Image 1 (tube, helix red, strand yellow):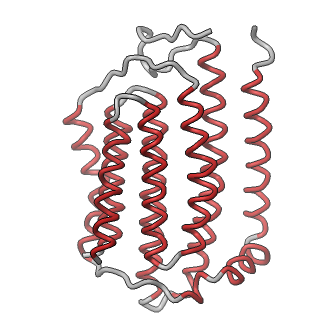
Image 2: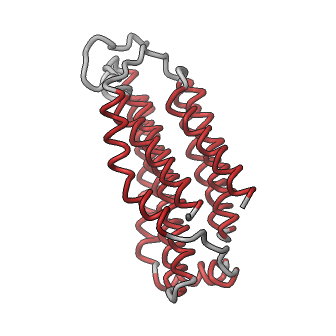
Length: 156
Length: 106
């Protein structure tokens, strides 16, 4: 419970830094730290496989790609709009989640058999092979599109 | 109180605030990634609730969905940031609704 609270506090602090940092590179770096904290929370819930994938794929590939991309772009002056209205809209949008959080009990970690690697691989390869194929295709298309866009052929 | 869902709710609140209060495209995209993290945490903590209330067979399905979502999020990041780099190279504004902040790269 104490570790969960500490990790939650860290996650909230990192997420505030993500939206409050003036420099976008720091913002993206804090996003990677937040990803690590969320992965630790997932591991505490019992989803070790998802935590590992979150660190390797999401933080290791995705967020570091954001950091590198942002560091290649020059900063422009940022304009903030209507902070109070945005905050009220955010409170309204997240109120169902808050209600759900306050009306349910703290969950216990799931038994390891439910998020077992062999069970998940069997699910994905037998029951969900079409979504797995679609994800593979979308990753391939994203890779090809990213390479062709950043090469910048065409408009010169 | 469900502490994991509460943390996910706070992260969701901060991410929605970040999206709505900023006009910078990169900041908005980073806030959307923050929202993705909060939703992953919320889905899996709901999975834990399901596991102990008779819906244990739904847990591997939720985990599979989250694994697919992580892979798709990475492909989305790669695609959107490549488009953004391409856009910046052609001197188009990154601020989504003014022309004052047109970048002068290249």
